[in-house]
Figure 1 (cartoon, rainbow, N blue to C red):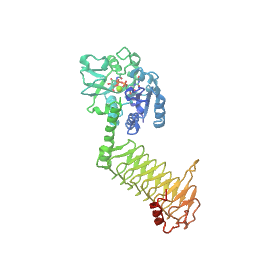
Figure 2: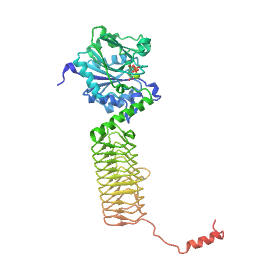
Figure 3: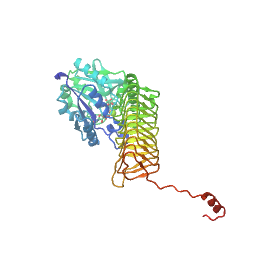
Figure 4: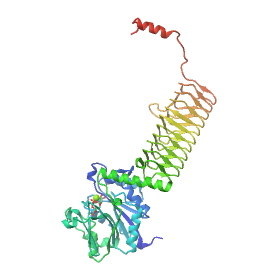
Length: 469
Ligand code: UD1
Ligand code: MG
């Protein structure tokens, strides 16, 4: 049951341009571990149990809106065409947040906030009967941040550019993350002024206004400043990525027993799922919705995106998988590439310098060396000789190849698709297969060899006599 006095929306401010990113991409869509920065505070809000979220968009807002609708379809979008400050952004969202008893306001460019901290802030605010609670932290160099000025039990925030010398000396700063009782925010939101150094409507000014009207405002001082790091340039983005990477990898090591000898070189995105007893060697990247099941091994220099590695599979290193699946006990690599829904079934193998696209390799079958397999289905227990290629493209469209079970495909066989070969089929090495091969047959499609006796000797003679040009 929803308890009405505790209902809480989360408003993410993401209309800013992010000039210092030096990029056409709006700041919140820059990637951190291959997910946009905005993914993280939205995820943390949902994980904390706050399912009502809204994002204020402005600069390149169409792109941000598009991404939000695709990825967080329940989230609302509020447009701020002109960025006139955080207070102005909050004002434009008033109709939205008025539906809740409380509203958490977060910056869309601060991705390291955790769901635990959000939960703690909201609980403390509600239990303490506050009108506004906000997170503060202490910095050695607080330049640029709003300073938290405590005066007895009163607290307010003054922006760096508006602060006096003595206020600038304060090292406790505003994180830019707040929870307001919406009635209290509504009572002051129209009274924010833009008469300040930046000519903007400052949301933190609401704190002093609420306090001046007898409301309770609390600064919650957090020990860990890392969670509040905002991203303003590429270097801060790299730093935040590293922090998030450590959090993800260490948590998998702690909770799932992930074995990882060099965690600082392993990159795992926030949506990746990993089972038990998985080993990951140095310099591996796992992105998107990748799943690695129990007992799998992932060798160095492998990069997996939206792919599945089933239990006890073995990626021997330098394997690249896009939207593909390696079956249970199957193996790949080193130097294998699979894409567009490629799949190795149980105990199948793809080896060195093999590319597989949109194809299924059956149980116990092997494609060990130097092959391209595209738009193909291979049955069980078939061995594909080195250098075999499915010629799937006729210049206009892609055509399919079907290879049966228990086949022995000779090295350097070309399957000119569309073509089907049955079970227990062999092909002669170097064959170009253009027609169906029935079950149990040998397909031969190559010129017969002929030998010219004494040819080498004759050639040498001609060369020494200067007769060959
Ligand atoms: C803000 C706080 C400051 C705090 C700091 C913490 C204000 C006035 N100051 O400063 O006290 O210490 O965060 O990082 O709020 N945004 C909009 N629309 C706007 C302006 C901003 O959506 O019109 C968004 C930005 O995209 C950003 C967030 O609000 O995600 C914060 O804005 P920013 O301009 O970065 O505020 P700061 O100067 O960092
Ligand atoms: Mg900022």
